[in-house]
Length: 415
Image 1: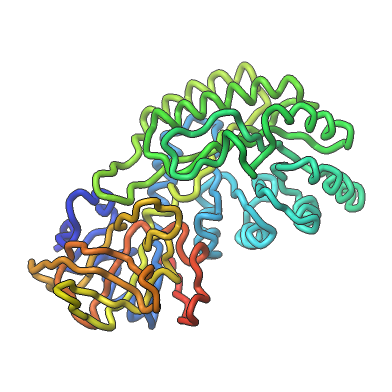
Image 2: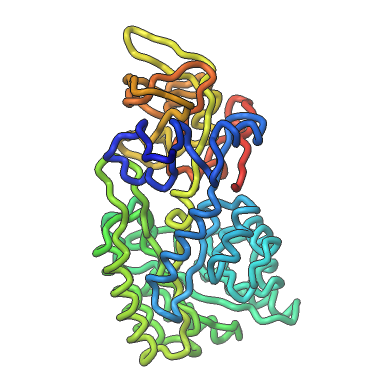
């Protein structure tokens, strides 16, 4: 019989996406113990295809016709997952030539690939022109390099201007715009940059505005989208051609910690419908884009570590796993948390029973920073049991110091 997970605290509302059968988590319809045997080793990350499809479908149903959904692959660049996402979204956003290769190998349409990043190397800019993808310009330095590549290759250099706006996304975990930032071009500099785009003969297509990420407040996201649209409309007056592309950013967050609730899409949907209606009259040639990474993939993934030792130190239980911060840095609290809080964690074991204890899940590294769960109420676990860190589909292995202390890398599987 499939039931809700008895090993999770009810305030971790985000965990209902993975069913449990007889105490074991089901991922892609498979018992976790069977999946671990199939993988052949722990630790590993597992991503559930059905959850990726469900989230993409929910978003597309909420968005108005004509608004495109892009996947920001920095959230999870696993090639098999990117290939899956190519079939679910309208475009891919990359942040390096390495990501560009993965996206194109996965079958992404170059016409729907955009390339952002504050420090693009000259060779990366030439690669982008050769591939025919859209470059989100973030510096005056990039313009002559793009023009030279365009002339040498006989191909148009497609460009949009990434704008550093004069506002922030309130309540976001990471602020990517407003104030002094390394991202984009300050809004007051944009008209002069647009004049250079025209003089160099670059193929202007539009604007990219990304104010922040990991936001659970629908009102803040709506406000940022409204301000971004209004700013793009203002800047369009200085543009060398009609706006064909307008990336309004993303910022959609997922719940990680007790008390957090899933983002309410209804007001965001209504807001986007209103903006799209305006755009049909005010920017008739423009495709509106919402760029999301974590929101698309974060809840579809788990990190699995096997307990290799159980210790009690001065009354505190330590469950020592074979994986830790070198694979899942974010769960350790060392990836942007100011005050460390536990990600949702559970013990997956057949017939776990009802016995619970306060325990800390730690990794094998020789540092006190290697902490995945601090004094958390968990099912009583023994050596050999599997511990699961939820919300691990985004910013996992690619955002973690995998070479630290020479431990083996984590496997990634898509099921």
